[in-house]
Image (cartoon, rainbow, N blue to C red; front, top):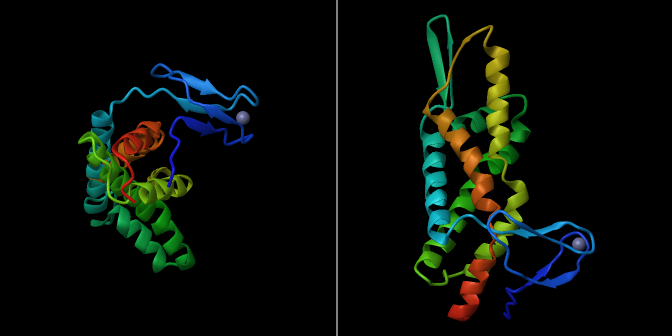
Length: 205
Ligand SMILES: [Zn+2]
């Protein structure tokens, strides 16, 4: 597969451009439709990888420790992120259980794993095995990762139920908050340096 990392296509009007370097925080715009083509990254590959590892840690904590604990008449029930998704399977909204689990757990998990895999090798100046497939999957997953929807749902439920039962946040809540803040950062970096690295290292697939 021939790769042209210096070429970029505007997603809005399909115009083709040659990339120019931009400073961190600055954006390159499509001259034709003014859409943002790409932004200069503040992060080095090592910093990007470190944030991805932190997101992985947050993801594990949100799935091991309770994101919400409900107390009522001396009894309490705690649920992790995974358990909140599975609780749907036993409710009247059971058809939603699988899509919800995909959107708030499986997709973010895959994103973190794939990005971690690619960046781990990139930090060592190597191309990850299955690089192109991983990058294509990452691009496909981007619109379907909705961990923030889980956080929003949990916050709304906590506010609505706070007058009726005792609501306690757990370590998972803060981990989920951290995950929701980190996922957009690690997923919206400029991927061009990774493709450039692949072309420099030569095709492996
Ligand atoms: Zn355009």
